[in-house]
Length: 131
Image 1 (tube, rainbow, N blue to C red):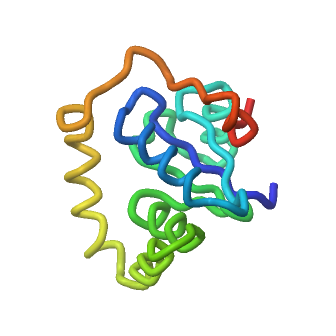
Image 2: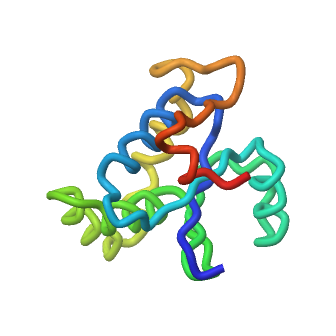
């Protein structure tokens, strides 16, 4: 696959809002999405040698896997507007970037809540999600 696939926690409200944020700022359609809990999400985790317990946003870009802040910053580099500028931070070593990512990831359910089920895409965005 030569496309960019974002795997996200489908029951996390922060993750759901992040997906909506990306879609709004991706006018060129760079990204497709699947939840970590979905059948295709599980298959992709296995295919790329990642644990089913992965607790991070995952970006699969041109058959390479990026996790945590590396994934988030690579995604930002493809978005419209000033968000693209955040992509430059990917050149800062992850040892300096990932601690903040870990704090947010660890507290995301407490701060943003959790859904009982994975999000369902709207009819307008259904084509952005992998079946």
